[in-house]
Image 1 (tube, rainbow, N blue to C red):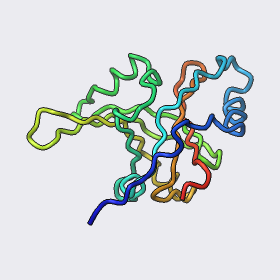
Image 2 (cartoon, rainbow, N blue to C red; image 1 turned 135 degrees about the vertical axis):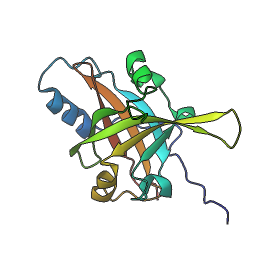
Image 3 (cartoon, rainbow, N blue to C red; image 1 turned 90 degrees about the vertical axis):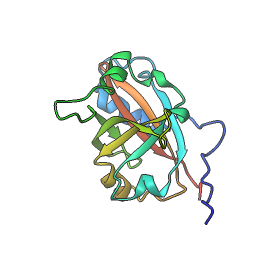
Length: 168
């Protein structure tokens, strides 16, 4: 059975919608939000079943598809490659603005997966934690195209998840 191709949305990504910019301003409460709050488009991708399955509870962000690796500081990127005392990969708690503009806390991790018995690893950033709730509340479905934006308030990393209209 051939996998159905899932599109990744318009080749020129639309800008962050105004209502998200307003929400970012609210989160910043008039604090110094740098010019564009250092907004960066991390990825624009079509959602797969694996991104939405409750059992998986994760949004995968393949390294090869990240548009701007500068969304993490060097320190953050390094932190995500370290392990805790139980040998579990460390994660970063991040506030995300959902498509509904509701705010939620999620975990950002990095997963390195070996391909077969090959030396090659494929790396992904992964958003998990309460991801399943975001999927349910925003009725995300396979084939929906989303954008993940990063921004910073007081140097603190945040995300915004935008569902692009009409990509069914």
